[in-house]
Amino acid sequence: MKFRCRMVDVISMRDFTNIVNVLSRLTKQCTLRITPSELCLSVGDDRVSMVWAELRQDHFFTEYVMSGVTDEQNEIYLELDATMLARSLGSLRMTAKSVKMKLTNKRQPCLTLEIELPSLNVESRQCLHDVPVRVIPRREWPEHQAPLIPEFDISLDMPQLKYVRKIVERMKNMSPRLTMSADKSGVFMLKVDTDSATVSTYFQGLQVWSCSQQDEQDKISATIDVKKFFMFLAWDVVHPDGVKCNILQDKIVNLYLHLSDYLKIHYFIPSMTT
Image (cartoon, rainbow, N blue to C red; front, top):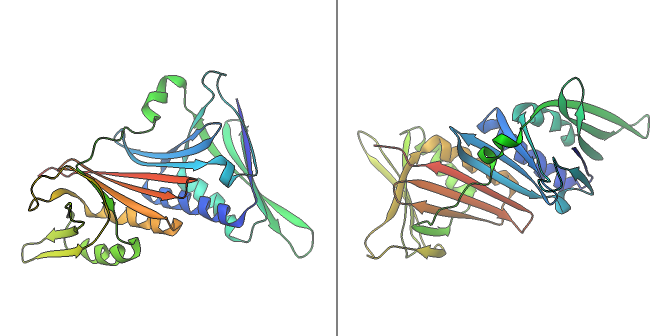
């Protein structure tokens, strides 16, 4: 079992760093799944997927070598501290020339980062970080598989995240619960209820991709944790091409971001019980 890769593109290093930084704000522990074609970073909450990010290796890396557990199960699953990895990648902000990542064994398994930085005195200098990891045994792999995507009641494009963020930043100080609604005409609504008022924001004319709604007057909605939704809005830092909002009535909200075909992120927020 082996893994090593190298990034030299400035934008790829920036995007990778931003992805890990956002994940580190959500949780301490995350899972890294390594396959021949992609890296998958995931975060679970009580054994339920919260974030699933797929990074296509041929876009991010100029060098990518991996050999999994067996030829038939050519994958590697690692558990690591997302905060530690984010801190280690912080050096990439210092105009790094490149970064190499490889799986090593230094008294314990580690994801070792070798970051090449420019220098005034010598041609370059190296910054080395070891992030301890736990190699996840095959018997636990089913717990870290890609989440099942249910049939949603409605799927539509989200407004630009920067506009939604400004609104939700105020709403989260008013109530812990936020109701998200949409209908087949492309109206998207965010609402919070307080003891003294109900505050709603409407976005109109959004692209609807699918909808099970029969009556024009009905809205498909779910009430979610406003702070979890606010944390999702931090993904604007990766500048997605688009964000799709999928709602299963009173059960779950799935927010799907994509950048061309090289980065796909699913974010899941379960509905809150009354």
